[in-house]
Length: 481
Ligand SMILES: Cc1cc2nc3c(=O)[nH]c(=O)nc-3n(C[C@H](O)[C@H](O)[C@H](O)COP(=O)(O)OP(=O)(O)OC[C@H]3O[C@@H](n4cnc5c(N)ncnc54)[C@H](O)[C@@H]3O)c2cc1C
Image (tube, rainbow, N blue to C red; front, side, top):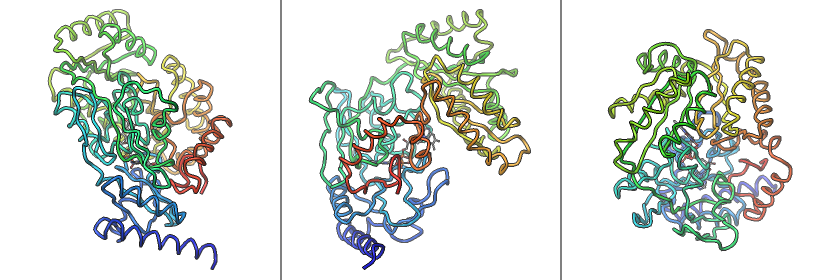
C-alpha cells in the first residue's frame, strides 16, 4: 500500500469512527453543508474537508481527538469563522477534519459574587456579554464581530477589540481553562481563582495558540461591575501626537476610566460618507484626524461628564482639540460607533486594499505613523492611507486603499513591497507584525522572519511536546504542512 493510500485509508477510518461516535445528525458531509466551514471570512482561502464534526460535550471532543491522534489525521478547530488570517480554514487537500464548536454553547456557571462565569467554547461572544449583564456584571471583551464570533475563537486568537485600553485583551480576562489536548486527554484547569501560583500557568499556552495545541472547550472568565455611566465623545485633533496627549489628559481627568480610544483619519470618515452613509460625519469642517473616545464608570456619576468637558476645554485652548461632540442619546452613541465600525465595509466598497494589523509602544505611535506613511507612499504614491484603530493600545490597522479610479491589480501587485516597508519600520520600533488578528496561514512567512530564533525554537518545542503527531491545525502559525 502506498503512503497516500494509507493516508486515505486512515482518513476514511477516522471519518467513519467519528460518524459512529457523534451520530449522523452531528456530522456534516454534504458539500453544501460543509461549504461555510471551508471558506474564511475574508475569502482568502478555500479549503476542503470530508467531515465537519459537531460535538456538544467535552467528552465528545475528547473522543474525536483521540481517534484523529491515533490515526494521524489533522484537525481544524472552527469557531465563529470571523478571524482574518485563515486559521479556521482547512487545507485544500481535503485531508483534515473540521471540528465545529457551535454546539458546545452552554453557560455552565454564573457567579456574580465571584465576578466570574464559566462559558463553553462555542458560546457566541454577545451571549456571554448578555449573561454577564443579566446579573449586573460586565464581560468587557467587545468586537465588531461579537454577534457571531465565539469565546473559544476569541481566546484562541487572544482577541483585542474596543475596550482593551481599560480592560486588557482576551488573555487578561481568563481565570481558567478546560482544554482537550491533541491525544484526547482533558486538561482541567477550569478554576475561578484570582491567585494560583502552582507552577507553570498552563492556560497561557492555549490563549492565542489558534488551535495548534489543543481545543479549548470551556473557560472561566472575569466579570466586572456593569458600567452605570458612559460618556462617548468624538473629537477632531491636529495629529496623532495631539490624540495621545488628549488620551493622557482624559485618563487622569476621568480617574483612569477611559475604556475606548480609537483614532480615525479624515480619509476613513470620507470613505464611510461616500460608500456607506453620507451623513456619517458628526462634525462640520475638514480635519486631519479624529478620536472616538468612551469613558465609563461603574458608579452613577453625573460629575464624570463635567470633568471630561473641563478637560476638553483645556485641550481646545491648548490647540490639541479642534472641535468635539458628545453623544447625548443612545442613538447618537450608536451613530458614532457605526461610523467607526463601517470603515472596513467602506474600504471594501472603495476597491482593493492592503492591510497591516500592527502595534508599537503607545508613545511611539505618532512617529510610527509618520515613518510608515512615508515608506508606504514611496511604494504606491497614489494610494489612499486609511490608518485607524485602537490607538489607546498602540494598535493600528495600517491600511491603504487603491486610488480613486486606480487599477486594483496593479495596486495589489505592490502589496508585498508595501508590507516589507511597513513591517521593517514596525520592527525598528520593536512592535508587533500582528497585534490582534493572529498568524493563521496568512502570516506564517512573516512570523518566521520577524520572530527571534530562540522564541521560534521554544514555540516549536512546545508544539512538539503537546502535539507530537502534528494533528492540531496543521500548517497554521508555525508548521509547514
Ligand atoms: C467586523 C469584524 C470586526 C472585528 N474586530 C476585531 C477586533 O476589534 N479585535 C480583534 O482582535 N479581532 C477582531 N476581529 C477578528 C475576529 O472576530 C477575532 O479574531 C475573533 O476572536 C475570532 O473568533 P471566531 O470564533 O470567529 O474564531 P474562528 O475564526 O472560528 O477561529 C480563529 C482561530 O481560533 C481557532 N479556534 C476557534 N475555536 C477554537 C477553540 N474552541 N479551541 C481552539 N482553537 C479554536 C481556529 O482554528 C482559528 O485558528 C473582527 C472581525 C470582524 C469580522
